[in-house]
Length: 537
Image 1 (cartoon, rainbow, N blue to C red):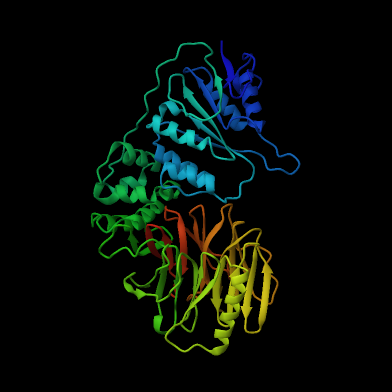
Image 2: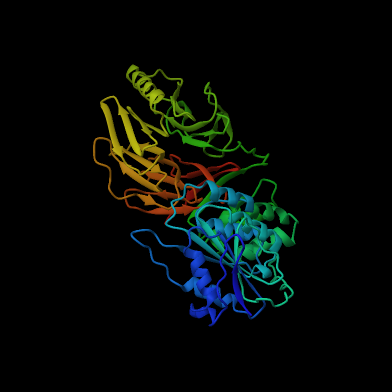
């Protein structure tokens, strides 16, 4: 007889089913609701049974069954992800995208979810169907077992009797077979793959199918397409249409790729809102990759005009030419350890914020006005007692964010402050324009504008459920532009004057962004540096 049986660690045994599960009145449905609402229940629930036993109907009912928040508390979000025909990599990218994190591999997903600062509105329940029909059921079982140990995530996994299932410290089992003997696992469906060496066919196909092909069926390099796809796969799976996928794939190609791929992808990406200027990736030798990116800055005047400042995790800051990312030397500084922010100033001085939240100054070649030297020294003294979390500079001012959500503009005419964010300020930038302004981002996911001496703009310029990880703003030919990046991998280039925005996702986690004097967007990750130009509307 069919039954719903929690594992011994859970200790409950519902009564036998008396009605169809999709009605919500059977014991299996009651067991699922009890598991869902019990804060002490295991995080993993397995729904097992033979073909036709009602597994899919039960999950359909659970997906449609509404949840309501109580006493102002957010409800439970339910995310349904079919596993049939999927590789572990494709599922990891799908889940990462739905849960607001970035993951290169399945192991990365578990780590990202365990350490993410993403703002979660209640618990998330993953409804994962047809594990028995996955392209990599064993690898998926391992991934799901790891996810079952992560904080505020719960999983309902559907699998036929006899399939290898995820292992977790505690598990609830809803068995629709009762004591029936196990049946054979279903063969994984594997629909026809596109030609994985044809960029047009690859971009036009279902991206999850392409991922399965590259991950499980075809280890060949395919002229560099496979490496590029695996580098940017999460963004490729989330991109809109063939043009969007072609753009992302074009930005992810390494220097050793078949030279015929770039023009083919560029033609297919023509409707996208961006044009690729250049890209450099880990392993590139001609031209060389500048190294992993932790922080970015851009200059627009003086002897270092049109240079990018690219800092890595060791504290080294390289100078690159904006036009082609060719090397132009290194910044001479003596800061030990990691740099978390840098701010070039108009007189050529570069201000650095170290991992302890303290300020350092690297002088430029031109003499610096004494009043700016005194200002910098005063800010440095302040941060030695009250560490900063973000840094920017504007003519006559140094702007600092703190861990309590406030932004401080230290200027020659005094100190201005704004309580802009709930939680830590993660990034600040400042722009010289007709009305100079400061832009700040926080762990609360908001990007906000503020002119020192005035009240902050009450409405957020942009907002997401993931923390802001990087900001940069600069004057551009059509007006000031703000580049913002979030921990979910999304980058937006925003024109504050009219609210226009363009979106890009490179695939890997974004570490830094910059806006150049020409209005181009530079995106830095630990394995790539990409420069894009907005296409004319």
